[in-house]
Image 1: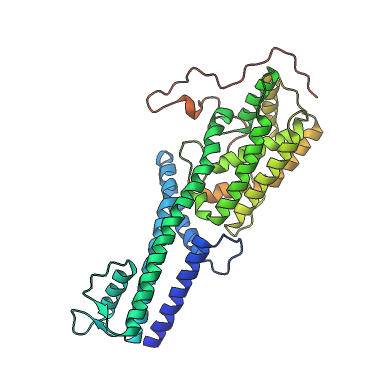
Image 2 (image 1 turned 30 degrees about the vertical axis):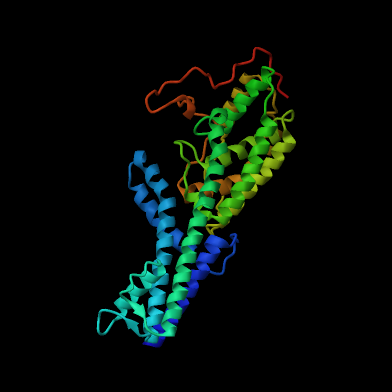
Length: 383
C-alpha cells in the first residue's frame, strides 16, 4: 500500500513539475508529449460554454470573459494543491518521523506539514525529526518558493502580451467601425483616396502584419490568451484578424492601384496566425457551411466603394480571385469562432451602430465627427 502511494506521489510530482515547465517556462510547441493542461482547458471550457449558452445574450459575453483569468487561477491552484499532496504522500509513505501535537500523526498531519512548508509559512508546531525528513521539507520549500517566483514573473509577461494585442484593436475602431468590417475600412480609405487625401493604408497594413506575427508568437506560447476577450464591446482579436484578412483579400483581387505587395505580406502573416492557432485545439477545421459574402452582399460592397469614389475591378476574374483567397483562411477563422464563442465580423458594416468612440455610458448619440468618408463628386471609372 505505502509503496503504491510512494510511486503515485513521485509520478504526480514529476508530472506537475513538467507540466508547469512546459506551460510557464518553455516556449510552446504545437506537438506536446504531455497534454494535461490542454485537457484541463478543453474540459473546463466545454462546461463553461454549456453554461454560457443557457444565459441571455446580454450577459453571455461578460460570463465568457471571466473564463480566461479564472481558469488560470484554477490551474495554478490545482498545481499547487497537487504538489502539496505529492510531497505529503512521499513523506507519509516513507514513514518519516515528525514532531506533532498528536501522539500518532496520520496523513492529515503530514498534509498540514506539507502545506505550511510549500508556502514557506512554517508555524513550527509540526516539523520533521530526521535528516531525510528535513531534506524533503527543504526541497518542498524550494519548489514552493520557485513556483511562486515563476508565477509572479509569468503574470506580467502574460498581461503585457495582452496589452500589446489590444492597442491596434482599439485603433481599428475609427478606421473600421465596431464591430470592425472590411467594408467600412475599405469605404473610409476609398473616400480618403478619392478626395486626394494622403492615406496611411500601406503603413496600416504593415502594422497589422507585425501585429499578426506578435499574435502568433504570444498566443502559441500562451494559448490561454485566446480566451482573454477584448476590453471593449463589439471588439475581439479574432474579428480584427478576420477584418484584416478580408481587407487584404479584396485589395489583392480588386484594387490594383492599392498597396498590393504589402497586402500580400500582411495576408500571408495573418493567415499563418489563423492556421497555427487552430492547431492548439487539436481538431481539423471543416469546410465552411456559410457564405460570408454572397453575391448580393458583394454587389453592395462594390456599390459602397464605387460611391466613395475609388476605381476597382469587379469583373468575373476579380470575383473568382477574391473567392479563392477567402477559401484560404475562412475555414480557420470560422473554426476559431465556433471554438471561442466569438462572432466573426460581416463584410459590410452595420450602419445603425455608431463607432465605440462616438458613444459613452452617458451619451448614446453620435458626436461631431462623421466617420463615413465624404462622397466624391468626381466620376468613377471602373476598371
